[in-house]
Length: 116
Image (cartoon, rainbow, N blue to C red; front, side):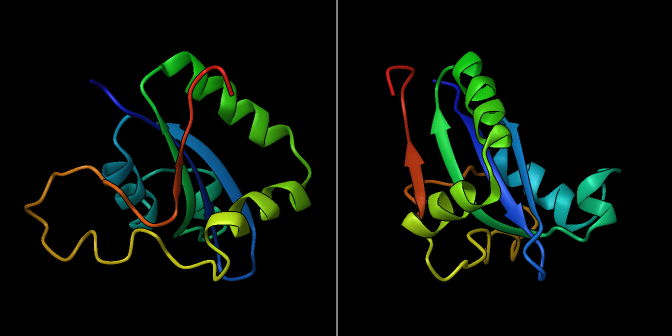
Protein backbone atom coordinates (compact mmCIF):
# COMPACT_ATOMS: atom_id res chain seq x y z
CA UNK A 1 0.00 0.00 0.00
CA UNK A 2 1.33 3.45 -0.94
CA UNK A 3 2.27 5.75 1.95
CA UNK A 4 2.06 9.54 2.04
CA UNK A 5 3.83 11.76 4.51
CA UNK A 6 3.01 15.14 5.97
CA UNK A 7 6.16 16.55 7.51
CA UNK A 8 7.51 19.57 9.35
CA UNK A 9 11.08 20.77 8.96
CA UNK A 10 12.95 23.50 10.83
CA UNK A 11 16.18 25.45 10.65
CA UNK A 12 18.52 26.43 13.49
CA UNK A 13 16.54 29.55 14.28
CA UNK A 14 13.23 27.64 14.42
CA UNK A 15 11.65 28.68 11.12
CA UNK A 16 9.13 25.98 10.18
CA UNK A 17 8.15 24.44 6.85
CA UNK A 18 5.29 21.98 6.31
CA UNK A 19 5.11 19.74 3.26
CA UNK A 20 3.61 16.55 1.82
CA UNK A 21 5.27 13.78 -0.20
CA UNK A 22 5.02 10.13 -1.17
CA UNK A 23 8.76 9.58 -0.68
CA UNK A 24 9.89 11.15 2.58
CA UNK A 25 13.48 10.00 2.48
CA UNK A 26 14.09 11.32 -1.05
CA UNK A 27 12.32 14.60 -0.35
CA UNK A 28 14.24 15.25 2.87
CA UNK A 29 17.47 14.46 1.03
CA UNK A 30 16.53 17.03 -1.61
CA UNK A 31 15.76 19.66 1.06
CA UNK A 32 18.98 18.97 2.97
CA UNK A 33 21.06 19.22 -0.20
CA UNK A 34 19.19 22.31 -1.42
CA UNK A 35 18.06 20.62 -4.60
CA UNK A 36 14.58 22.17 -4.28
CA UNK A 37 14.41 25.89 -5.03
CA UNK A 38 12.30 28.02 -2.77
CA UNK A 39 11.58 28.52 0.91
CA UNK A 40 13.60 25.66 2.39
CA UNK A 41 16.67 26.49 0.34
CA UNK A 42 16.40 30.23 1.04
CA UNK A 43 16.04 29.76 4.82
CA UNK A 44 18.38 26.75 5.15
CA UNK A 45 15.63 24.49 6.50
CA UNK A 46 17.27 21.07 6.79
CA UNK A 47 16.03 19.40 9.99
CA UNK A 48 13.07 16.98 9.94
CA UNK A 49 11.31 17.47 13.28
CA UNK A 50 7.92 15.78 12.72
CA UNK A 51 6.05 13.60 10.27
CA UNK A 52 2.80 11.70 9.92
CA UNK A 53 1.84 8.89 7.56
CA UNK A 54 -1.36 7.94 5.79
CA UNK A 55 -2.36 5.79 2.84
CA UNK A 56 -4.72 8.40 1.37
CA UNK A 57 -3.27 11.28 -0.66
CA UNK A 58 -6.40 13.41 -0.24
CA UNK A 59 -6.21 13.25 3.54
CA UNK A 60 -2.46 13.97 3.39
CA UNK A 61 -3.03 17.14 1.36
CA UNK A 62 -5.91 18.15 3.62
CA UNK A 63 -3.75 17.61 6.71
CA UNK A 64 -0.88 19.62 5.20
CA UNK A 65 -3.24 22.54 4.55
CA UNK A 66 -4.67 22.23 8.06
CA UNK A 67 -1.24 22.37 9.70
CA UNK A 68 -0.11 25.23 7.44
CA UNK A 69 -3.15 27.19 8.65
CA UNK A 70 -2.26 26.81 12.32
CA UNK A 71 -0.54 29.41 14.43
CA UNK A 72 3.09 28.70 15.20
CA UNK A 73 2.40 27.76 18.83
CA UNK A 74 0.03 24.98 17.75
CA UNK A 75 2.67 23.57 15.36
CA UNK A 76 5.27 23.69 18.14
CA UNK A 77 2.88 21.81 20.45
CA UNK A 78 2.41 19.14 17.76
CA UNK A 79 6.17 18.77 17.27
CA UNK A 80 6.98 18.70 20.98
CA UNK A 81 4.31 16.09 21.75
CA UNK A 82 6.40 13.49 19.89
CA UNK A 83 9.81 15.16 19.60
CA UNK A 84 10.39 17.41 22.64
CA UNK A 85 14.12 17.74 21.89
CA UNK A 86 13.49 18.80 18.28
CA UNK A 87 15.89 16.06 17.17
CA UNK A 88 16.52 15.62 13.45
CA UNK A 89 14.40 12.55 12.73
CA UNK A 90 16.27 11.93 9.49
CA UNK A 91 19.64 11.63 11.21
CA UNK A 92 21.42 8.55 9.88
CA UNK A 93 19.17 8.12 6.82
CA UNK A 94 21.79 9.14 4.32
CA UNK A 95 24.88 7.32 5.54
CA UNK A 96 24.54 4.76 2.76
CA UNK A 97 23.66 6.50 -0.51
CA UNK A 98 22.57 3.19 -2.06
CA UNK A 99 19.61 2.73 0.27
CA UNK A 100 16.19 3.62 -1.07
CA UNK A 101 14.03 2.54 1.82
CA UNK A 102 11.27 4.57 3.38
CA UNK A 103 11.26 5.49 7.08
CA UNK A 104 9.57 2.93 9.27
CA UNK A 105 8.47 2.88 12.89
CA UNK A 106 10.40 6.02 13.75
CA UNK A 107 10.17 6.93 17.40
CA UNK A 108 8.72 10.37 16.63
CA UNK A 109 6.02 10.12 14.02
CA UNK A 110 2.29 9.81 13.97
CA UNK A 111 -0.13 7.82 11.86
CA UNK A 112 -3.64 9.02 11.21
CA UNK A 113 -6.68 8.18 9.21
CA UNK A 114 -9.29 10.36 7.55
CA UNK A 115 -11.54 9.87 10.59
CA UNK A 116 -9.21 11.89 12.82
